[in-house]
Amino acid sequence: MATFAQILGALLILAAFTLTQRGVVTPRSLTALLLNLAGSAILAVVALGGLQWGFLILNTVWFIVAAWGMIGWIKTRRAAPAVP
Image (tube, rainbow, N blue to C red):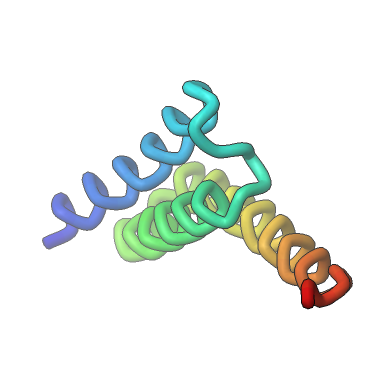
């Protein structure tokens, strides 16, 4: 199960990276943020379970940055005027 979770988490982050590099999404798009958020959360939990400290630090920071981006995305949408 841990191997499946590692692969899933990595694929989510790599999907965000690939889509961003190909210009399909922007780094601050909802898609990229959600993929990074989910992927890093999965990998951080796996790293914690295996006591892999470097991997845990990397993915925890990745998660925090993605969450910070998500908060900014939400604030931007709330501040936007309603379209009639």
